[in-house]
Amino acid sequence: MMKRKSENQEIGNHVTRRGFAQTTLGIAAGSIAAPSVLTAAKTDLPMIVGEGDYRYQVHHQWAQLPSRFGWKTTHNVAVDSENRLYVIHEGNAGKEELQEPTIFVFNENGEFIQAFGTELDGGGHGIEIREENGEEFIYACGYLAVKTFAKYTLDGKIVWLKNAPMQSGVYADGEDANRKNDWGRDRFTPTNFAFLDDGDFFLADGYGSYYVHRYDADGNWKSCFGGAGEGNGKFDLPHGIWIDKRDNRGPEIIICDRAHNTVQRLDLNGQHLETLEGYGLPANADTFEDLMVIPELFARVSLLNGSNQVVAYLGDDIARIKEDQADGGFNIRKDESRWQNGKFIHPHDACFDADGNIFVAEWVATGRVSKLVRV
Image (cartoon, rainbow, N blue to C red; front, side):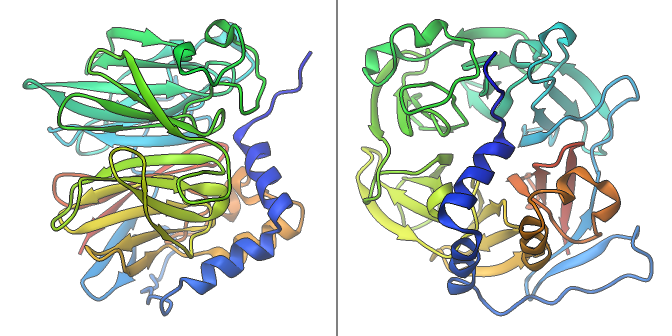
């Protein structure tokens, strides 16, 4: 039997290969002065993080599941037009007989509404919501042995479900039917979506081929760009993707090139425009007005202004996570007793709601979804 390779192993491999010191030095090189954090008398009280005009009250474990469910590793978050929150978690990887929902929905007060998405169980990863002709749809994908991506109605009905795009020519024979937990540049393990106004969308194969695929509105493959490499427009784990339509630009493609610890800007044809440095395993992106949010697995959330300058770091706990990694790696993510109020461990995704508040999903074993309410 092939040994399961999880996101934990993938992160560990990249950090070991490049050296954690290199990662943290890269963070320091792009840092601004450490933001102030207002402490509270009790650790269970909300904390204020950030600085200046970018201060947020942190509410950890904001999204509460009913007792019949339990978080596995939380991965991504998305918000619909009614400010309902959609959270995707990994599910029971390697335990197909348990078959549980991977997508949970909460109202604007954090109360549970519904659950679905058993077809992504064992590999739930990326999730986004898109409005199409007045109706909203969920796009979600699964990595590990799931190797698929799907479109859902907001109540969880599958519109279509698709596998590896064999016509791209970048995958091993039979990869569109492969459900083994194998990894490599000729494998399909997608991570995240980004949408264009003309109906097309992009899908990043962040753990597989390292290509970014372009599809039409019906999910038909059109083209791809990227692939593995060290140069501009090439990637080492293109984990997150977003279309940046803020003022005075683009639209442009944002790629969180995680193992390179960089964020790349590209045009809509995949041509390189700029590389932003100084991140610690950036995982995804989202925008609101002139702000862009970048969650970093080591171990903070960064806010950028319209000029892509960092204006605030939120929940920074890099030093402690660095120490944890040096002691054997990623132990805090498994031990909730060591989680600290106002501090992030491994932010894996972040998105804005309609009011500019931020939701953060963390890559921790028992799941955590926090809401950051702008002060």
